[in-house]
Length: 383
Image 1: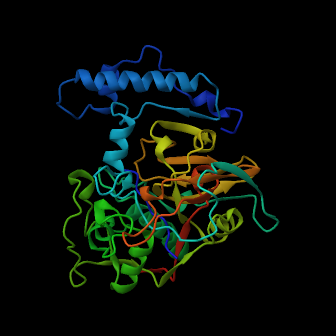
Image 2: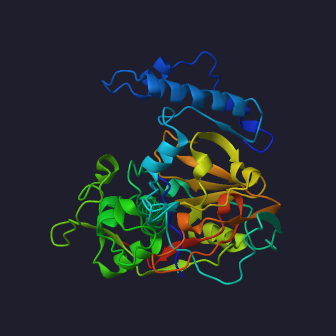
């Protein structure tokens, strides 16, 4: 089984309202001063128009009093399509129409028990959660929110965040790992989830690579450059000169679309790499997000890390790889429903298979399909 690792480069009654910023009178020049102060680029009229359209969208959404709010972030002068292309990598080539290749696409488990293609969404009642603790939080195991930048390497960053969290639990040490080693050195001969590196791969491929290489080195020894260059780069890992950070012995795929098993593993084991539909996350600012289920969005196209949950407050806590200025300091809270939504992913070509596999529409469960695919490493060793 393969885990969908795709890279798309406060409680429910709007208790987050006190933290919602008032953007009345906020201007493009203020945006530039706040988010582009280190740039010498002149203001761009086209970018100003895009920013103002996004600002209007933010203000209109926040006026609704929803359980989550939008916010101006460093990407607010980009269209949503541009953002997804830059920070996830949507490939619109003739050969791969609607296929997400730059880190968005990835293999999913193939199965024959899918719903008819015309079926859009329904709900699934909770399974018995008697042995699931009420809450869990592993934020403290990951000391820094990583940023994939303009490279479709979310699969590598979901891997890295998960490894770092699990390593802390194993050793009580905050370590760094080379996301560049994962991005540049992981083979992808069958083009699963893309063609490799900034063009996409999977958690399983990264785990397979890490089982076959002596170790994963540190970020300091092999720093990440692909986020700024947009290029995968050649593998430059050298086990003779680079220091070891950690290694793993294997990985486990959790049962597909199983809420209870994911929550139990997060509670007892630590961070878990998960797949989500993240197209609507662009301007997320905070709160408990229900934007996928409300819009019927089940197109799973991004890989992130589940680090905790709270059953009473009704959310699953997710660490993203778009940096600490996005969302709630790099995190998003996805709504846990009494009856989890079941949505048909009608476009599995956006992130579903290796090139030699069929692409069959299938159901995903949970807000943004978060229970559809999940994996975690085993036999974690810290050096």
